[in-house]
Amino acid sequence: MGRTSYTGARVFDGTEFREGALVVEDGHVVGFGAAEGTVVALGGGVLAPGFLDLQINGSGGFAVDGNTDQAVLETICSVQARLGATGCLPTLITDTYEVTARVVEAGIAATKAQLPGFLGLHLEGPHLDVRRKGAHDPALIRRMEPRDLALIIEAAAELPALMVTVAPASVTNAQIRAIAAAGVIVSLGHSDCSAAEARAAMAAGARCATHLFNAMSQMGNREAGMVGAVLAGDGFAGLIADGIHVDPISLRVALAAKRSGVFLVSDCMALAGTDGTEFHLGGRRILRSQGRLTLEDGTLAGADLTLPRAVQVLVQEVGITPERALAMASSIPAAVIGRGDLGHLRPGARADMVHLGADWALRGVWRGGVAA
Image (cartoon, rainbow, N blue to C red; front, top):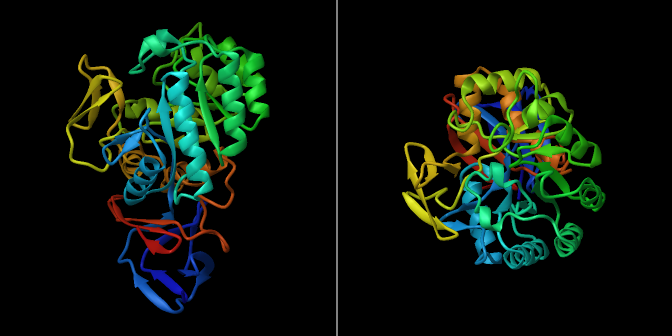
C-alpha cells in the first residue's frame, strides 16, 4: 500500500490541531506536511483519531447477552466502526454468573482471533446497588462471591482490557483491591453510596465512574454523594452527552468542575446502526422514540447515541472547545484502557480515523487506512 495524503480538513491529532496534510502509509500515520502519493481531498471539516467507546451494550440488532459469541462481537464492532467508534468495549449489563462466563469466553475467543475493533469487555454489574438499578434487573443484582472474583481475575489475564462496574453496596474494598491489582479497570456506578464510601472505594483501586450523574447518588449541599466524589477526584468518568441523560447545564458545570479525565460513552444498545423501534432485553421490552431508549415504564435504558453525535452536542449545545470534545472521544478513553497506540494520529500510530463535517456530523471512517 503506497502513501496516501488526506487534505482539505483540519487535522486533530488527539491533543491539538496540526497543520498540513495527514500522510498515511501501510495503515499507519507517517506524519504531517506536504501531500504525497494518492491524495484524498476531504472538502472541509475535521479529521480526527478513530473514536473509542467503552460502553456498548449492543449494535446491529444484537445485544451483549447470553447468546453472544465471537460472531456477535464481530457484528457489534463492525457496526460501531461505521458509526465512528473504530474500537469499543462490548458491555454486558447485570446477568447471571453463567451468562457472564459465556460472554467472557466469547471475548477471549475474539481476542485470540484479533477481531478488528475489539478492545476488551465491560461488565456493568451484577455487583451493583438495587437502590440505583436503572434499567438493570434487580432480581439479578447481587454481592460479589468468590467465584465471581476468580472469574474476573482470570478474564483480566486473557482480555486486552476489562472494565468492571461495581457499587460499594455489593463489593468490599478488599475485592476492589484484588481485581484492580489484576489489571481490571474498576469503575463505580449504579450506586447510592455516600461520598465517603465512594472515596474509600477509589482509595482501594476504583479509578473510573460509569455514566456520570446517571444511576448514582447526587451532589447535595451537606452530602456530596457519588457525583461530588467523582467530580472532586482525579480518576476518569464516562459521560453520556446526548442532552437527555444529562442536561446541557449539568454537562457544562461538570466539565468546568472536572478539567481532566472525562470521556464520552454512547451507552448504546442493540438498535444502534438499525432502523428498529424496539427489542427485548432479558424478557423486557425496550422502546425507541425521539432519541430515547426506555423500558415500558419510561425508565431510561441505555442511549440512542453515537460518539460523533455526542461531540456535536458538546460543541454546539454545551460550548466545549472542539479540542476537548474530540479528546473525550479519542485520546482520553485510550488512556483509560492503557492503549497509547490508539486515540492519536501521531507518527507510527494506526491510521484509525474519522472525518466530521463542519456541522460535526460523521462523514467518513477509516480503520488502518481503509475506509470502513
